[in-house]
Image (cartoon, rainbow, N blue to C red; front, side, top):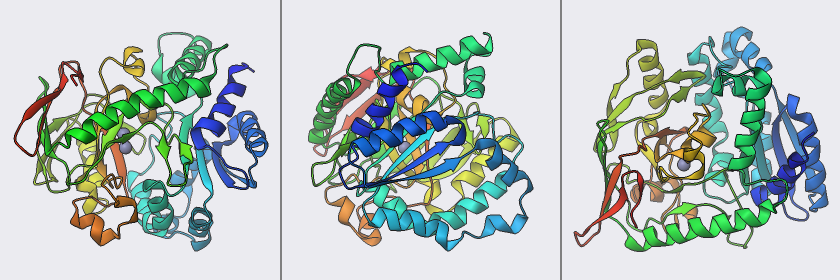
Length: 410
Ligand code: ZN
Ligand code: ZN
């Protein structure tokens, strides 16, 4: 096995999840990546982990279940399943997920089964989700290469070559080379993102206005007291972790009812395993009032996704990524949100991270009162383009260019 995988495992345990002595760790990993999982587990114990819990998955078995399991199983969620994650979150465990599979792996699955399951699992896992979204627990999502994923990305080259290219792309995005110290590389990267976060938080914009030639013309108000997040997260006790690896974005929450205009997507969007190439949302006072896309089946799926609950049709994230940035410059579509969102400015519909002062300790009612959105879903979609301009308006009416021609102007 490529020795860089050892470095990768160490990076995820140290800079990714930052597991602490005497802390429990939960690892979600596909069964076919068992060798990498073993590396993670031994690195975790070396770092002093109390106990590591494995949650094995398999995309093919998951698909079989959606296709053939009894219909009623998608309308209930067993309490013990929720109990495991809710209890471990309450006890302060850390949660590491290693993803990466066939982007078309859920093709042909009845989308309503996935949505029904989300509707019952969402409320049952509310405690776990809240702990994650308010950074009360460490969590990290990273990816490993997969043959079908590589084929999808590089259909014109032999399989082995495609797999090699995807592996190189992942190591490059993860800032791992044969002879560097990736933990140090990530520390420096985090500092650069911190600088950007600080600038935007200080400007304290009232709203952002997005325009590009594809038809995006969108105004997003930001809540009072908002701050910009991104890069590594520092918990109250000083523990740091990186929730997404790779990450190139800084983000904050929009004001729930303060979004107006039209946003046109710039990269394919995955709805339950079906890839929607292009779509547009029109917003009125925060709510998505119109969905445009060519294929009627895609339209139905998008409408299902934003209809999963009331909050799903409102925005929960505004994220800025320069057009000229490492993953964007690879100029390849990953068909995987973890990578594609870090190549493009994006928005998310659904729940927002509580990125307002004191937000992490607010009750659901208080969060709603300051304009944060809540939902059982959170789905990123890309709106960045080479010609995207974003102008920020301050509370005293000054207009300041934030993005010019797809890149930061600050
Ligand atoms: Zn994001
Ligand atoms: Zn997001």
